[in-house]
Image 1 (cartoon, one colour):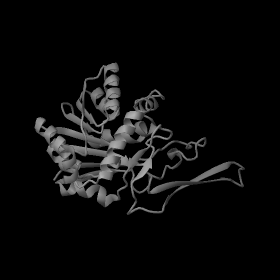
Image 2: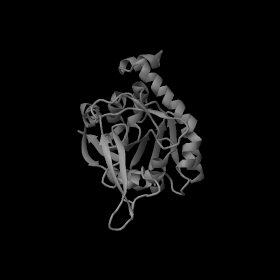
Image 3: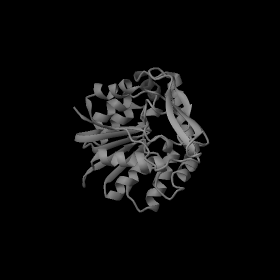
Image 4: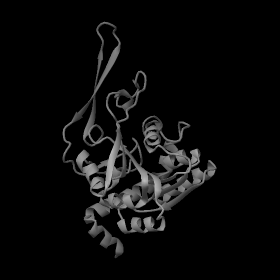
Length: 287
């Protein structure tokens, strides 16, 4: 009964709640596959993480020794491990028990001390309770490729000011709302240069809709066993809930791959779109 009341208060429809439950089941189902995929190259995270996402999180967070870190939507713990390896006191929260299991296993294997726990980012009462239990707050809160999976941003926008210390920073990184799916669609042309006879690849992004796009099924990583439901938000609707709850943005980045020569074996790869940001990163603070 409590869960249903919370969803009604947050203005979520039965359809949105069902989509959230479906996303939880999907993450549980792909946990093994995801963990393998994120480490098959020998790094902790695929190329999007290592080349685009983690550097922005590291820079925007401006972590200093002694500061605490909370990762919301921690998944298998890639961001948690980055900070823990620096010596930070790190907590990771997620709504997939099986992804949390993977995170705990990796932390133990790597000899890192990280606290992991369950939380539903659509349940504002649970997040308020968590904030009360951690009334000292956190210096840094990170949110990585998570907001696009939430039917509503209202619960997390209301909870963040309660979880964040004065002087603390919230760092969010997600797919770019204009240039990534479902708004931006990759296009390419392959032709022969008449002077060299060599094949040339030209790429572009085609945006047919931007302001109003319904929820859609998507793969976080191509080939994953089950798709996820994602929610497109233009800039104003992405940021407004946080502004309304007393947070302000003081930094923004738009990272893209800078791979020399691109990836001619896979024309659709974002490595062939060096002038198109794949991600949007921004930092929030208390007003």
